[in-house]
Length: 188
Image (cartoon, rainbow, N blue to C red; front, side):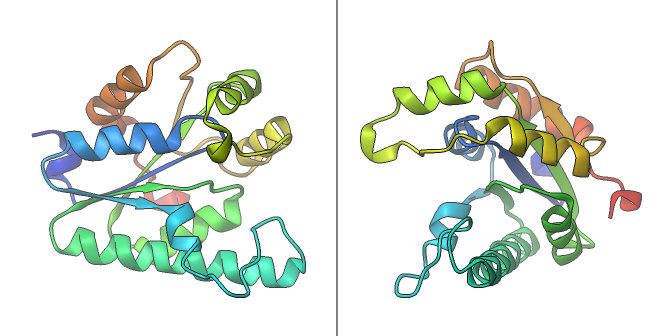
């Protein structure tokens, strides 16, 4: 049993597109004794008719749907944590306002934040290596990572995964995230 299993923690894994979130979170969730994988794309994709992509138009509707999807992710995570499962959340949290929304909605549960940060070039290469149906056309890696760092760079565990395999990354997350990624109450 790991510290992620022992504590009543919600694990939030974020990073730019191509950072390895989906692969790593699947591996982490499979390693834990009692866990649930919450894929942000799947939860946000529950809206079918009238769906607006997070960076889409109209911008006010995109923002409203992001808030709704994030609220649903947090509600699921809270319910699962309260039932004794470690929720492993896979989602892009682009700024401090959205992170604060997660922290508020998940309080008083412990939030463990891991930011996978292999660098923009690694993200682009990883995305290009995906099956064409799974590629994510995105060219704002540097700007997104800068916004994340400016907003909450001092919080959680920023993990450079550029030289790690998904399995090595998942192993490090399971072993070290609880100690290194905890977001203190003052971070809320």
